[in-house]
Length: 118
Image 1 (tube, helix red, strand yellow):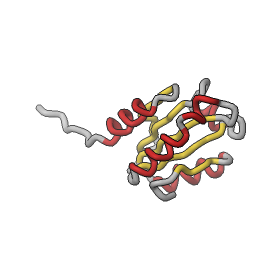
Image 2 (image 1 turned 90 degrees about the vertical axis):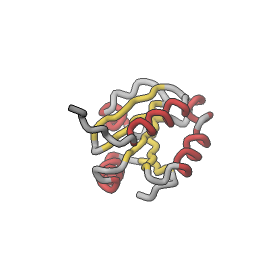
Image 3 (image 1 turned 30 degrees about the horizontal axis):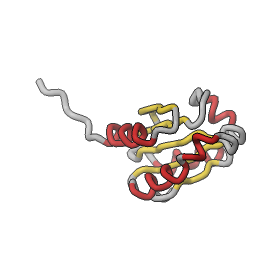
């Protein structure tokens, strides 16, 4: 799964494959959207530009109508919802068309872990 592009996820098999290909050390950002969702469509180009800028992050897009099982797994109730996974663990959820919050969450998730100072 190359960085720099948003990868559409048409089904659960594609989702599983994308997560496996990203591996444990790469951040995955998923946007949950629907064709009929105006706010999600309004920020689509900005989301794609974010993917082009952050080559070390894997960006996915999931249509909630085509993938209800994936949407249910992440408890998506509104669109757009952005989910961040790192080491296959949930690192953040942003609800709403606010790409500044998404960018901040990505930067926070990518910060090196600080060792406990004692």
